[in-house]
Length: 70
Image (tube, rainbow, N blue to C red; front, side, top):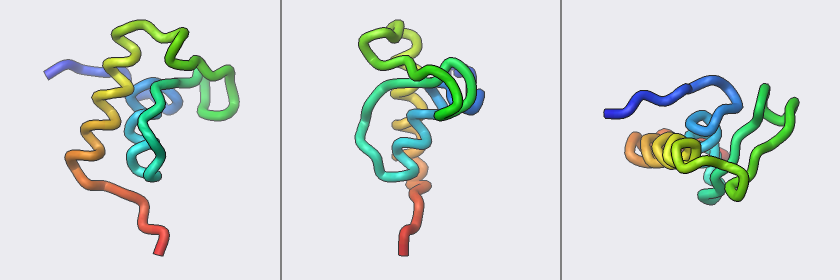
């Protein structure tokens, strides 16, 4: 199993957060803190960064850890 950088704002973290909050699959990450630094979009990401985002998203989907808005 691959090991990903899980820093807040990173690709893996953003994938997991998008899944958790019920947002669609949209690879991206932030160069620093989430919403406090420039956002890197999918067209600017490397294959490894997209893989990290995907892994975070899929891991959270598999765990079923979703925000309860009720």
